[in-house]
Image (cartoon, rainbow, N blue to C red; front, top):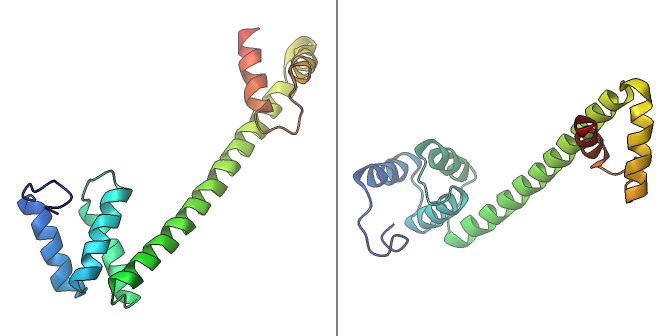
Length: 142
């Protein structure tokens, strides 16, 4: 903790969190160092007690015994969560696009057709993920 904070002493609460993990999860010090670094990177240098305890328990169940194993597991988990978040983002964009397109179809006086032609003229097609967003924005401006 001192290395990360340029020599400053860690707070008593941070020390208490670390001591609890050492006692409860019985992780080796080298694994705990990797865990601390990983959590601080993931949480913008904030030591969140619940988050670090959850990961420590996971690593203890996986019987992580060395810093090398801890780093490998951290990289794997980070990659897995990035992939999950990417899938969620794509689904969210598709859901917004689909709901936006549904709203566009219900537009009065043929405005939907005008908007679709306008967006196609600009270079967007109905299969683009952003079409729903653009149509909604254009509709609100009309």
